[in-house]
Amino acid sequence: MRKILALFLSLALLLGTAMPAFAATGEGNIDGGGGNMGSGNSSSYWNPGMDGVRVTVINAESHAVVTTPVDLTNKTPSTGIIHFGKVCKLTYNGGASLSPVVGGYSYRNPSQSLPRIISSGSSSASIEAIRSYFTDEQVIRSLAGYVGMDFDTLVNGDYKIIIEPIAYLNYDGQQFAMTATEAALYDQVVSGDLRYWMGSLTHQNLPLAIFLEEADLGYPAWSGSTTSKVSNEQIISSLGIGIVRFNDEVEEPEVDEFDYEYRVDTDVITSVEVSGGQSDPDNPVTVQFVIEGSTYTISNVYYPDGDSQLVWVKWHTPDEPCVCTIQVRVLGGGTAQSTITANIVDLDGNDPPNPVADDRNDTFTLVDIPEKEEVSSASWGIWSPWWQENWVWVENWEKCWHTDRWTDSEGKSHTDRWYHWVDNGWWEDQGWWEFDYNAYTASLTATMVITPDSLSPTASSSALKSGYGIQQSVTASVSTTQSAAVTAAQNAVTSFPEFNYEGFWRLLNRSISGKRSTFTFKDNPYSTYNRPTHFTPIWYPDGSYTPYTWLLDCWTPAGMLSLNLTDSVRISGDLWEDWHIAPTN
Image 1 (cartoon, helix red, strand yellow):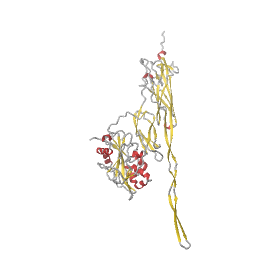
Image 2 (cartoon, helix red, strand yellow; image 1 turned 120 degrees about the vertical axis):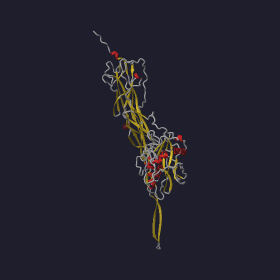
Image 3 (cartoon, one colour; image 1 turned 180 degrees about the horizontal axis):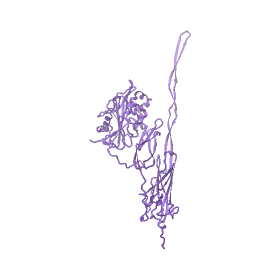
Image 4 (cartoon, helix red, strand yellow; image 1 turned 90 degrees about the horizontal axis):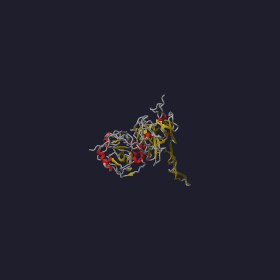
């Protein structure tokens, strides 16, 4: 039989999420929770074992839903049960609303029965049984058939399966089918009444039946209590979701494309775009970057419905070259790129060789000066929410009864009773969140100056003989409207015409003060006086001598700013002309 490679899942009584890189066969990140069920009443209750799962296939890269979800259960739900259609958690978090339907509920009883999904008191779900179930080839083949996909296509690594727990319960005299996310959304509709009567199920054992042990698809790993009730917000943002992922490869793949390239020992900025639904102070988004063992948390990320927000973190790269994998977690709804790879390189160590007096290059011809990526300015922004008040009178009409008792002229007693309607309403702010966009910018400017080494005996301010040294100064300045979000320019690399601007270069010494940077040559070990100089080759022809510098590593949330710089001195003659042989007597 074909073996399903690297299938892994994360259910908190079920599936864990994606492992970093590829997992070995059958590995899983599995954790769970739950507790005693408590009690409801005669019209609101749940019978243990009345559970199931919703299965949805999504594209692993775009996270788009590619099949209609299918509900699986060992039970036979009532024909008149109230449900909310076949909607995946990702779709709800993308802005879909609840749409209750009475009757017409579709489901499948799988040929291989489900293990218990939701714990209830002493009847706990078995993590081992669930792991075994969702890594069984025949089960996966059945799931492929249920959702209408070819098995080999489903497990080729391009797709993931979303698993959500379902409970079949009675609430207020009606039977319902609900995923954990639907229960939280419905509790918001009924102003907390579902949690009040059924909270041990809907806000504890149901959402804690399945959660992620490691972040994936923009959903965080659950680190809260696994034995206590949770809030609607926690359920919607973090719980009631498990993931099954397939890979046909076991070995760690060789990474040949990176999201970022950074230099060692450098302050950098890493950014992601967060979108999906609306994030406001009532429903805020938090983003976490996990970098080199440290977690950077950016709270109160806001954006309007249909838009997005750039979110960034400033950090310092290691001192040695490496490939750094950055995990991104989005808490509270919304989605973003979940994994970022950064290639961290060292530009040092490619200094030109020692020039000697008898060097020759009779075939030398000048080449064009290179132009590397140049971005001199960038812009970005931050959404700021504000509350638009909308005070509305909420009517609450009530009967006001009046009684009048009186005696007529004959001494008979009479009673009249009547009423009129009184509006005992109240003013209610039914406003909404509006958003202002605060735009920010940064720009990089720089100058480069090449001068003959002052120890060149016959040099002028702009000319020298070949074979003597030159010195260089680069001054860079960053202007920005959001200083905390921008770094200074931190690296400069100079290459030279005698090497056709390739193969050898000098990484300049840097000195940084605020957003102003200066760069000079490092001390040359071949210099008699240990000068910060670069020696021109003795054979270089007369004319313009033009070094080229790439100024880089000025980081903003919108990317890196960099500049191409050049300056020239004039070569006229060579140092041999300054030598003479003294006559002997």
